[in-house]
Picture 1 (tube, rainbow, N blue to C red):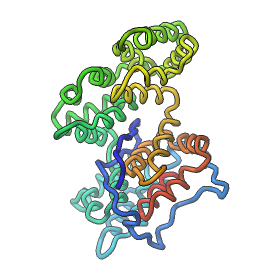
Picture 2: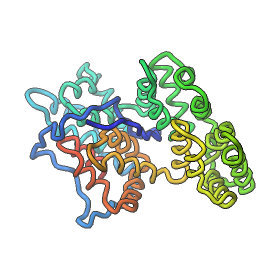
Picture 3: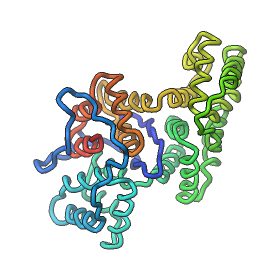
Picture 4: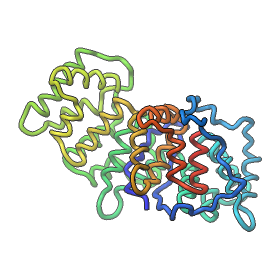
Length: 366
């Protein structure tokens, strides 16, 4: 069974990014028998080197014809048996925006939601990944956040992974989607389900007030580094408000300059200081913010590697990152994965998954 899902990562959503479907439980590996007709669209070269990065628009199907796609999908799901190869080919080679057009046209043509049709035809993680590709990013993130907070207990890790890795524009879109879908305020629900310093950093991030420019003020970096020291190691206890102000509001380049200044001033890495001065969910939130500021692609590469190494596979993390980053920075994540772990992401996914689920993920990685 998949391990706990703390990615979603993972979700740095773009206006044309992919998104993932809610929750996933893995059927036994090989839940879908591979058919001879369904082959991965392409493979890595024999030397295992990562494919050259391609711009996101390269995924757009040449000569996109929504009517043709809708007819092919309907045919794939009609009668006895399902043409998984056709479903994989269409979903993996269209952009997020094109899939939205397909969903709308399908409902117009056949009077049924494409998601409901696929739910009846597919199963296991293949179903989850296919449905993920049909979701709008902001709405799916909103559903994940609501799921993390509803009922008894709160999945703080999921709140952290989403809110600590998104841009201002994405946070605004997620808040609007949450209000529309659940008729509730995301900020109010976060306040009601968290407390103390974790609540404060998450609410700070929900204001979507981060500077997203690329200018660096070295004097400010030095000042912030000193304030972080004074707020952390330089006092009994930790003044989390100072950390919130810096980590939730400065642009990433400015944060990297601040971390360098901290190293020079204190002689210690900022991550090591956070490890020593904080604990629990607050530590996880701070470290996620720091890692994303330092190397976002490396952060996601590490999450993917950890989802597959050792016994068992965290399929939801695989779905989350591969689907949501496909039109954002997946080529860079693949290159970083190769650099860090001396193996290709595609090859590791092939060896850790099976059936049509594997074919869909591998197709998205090409």
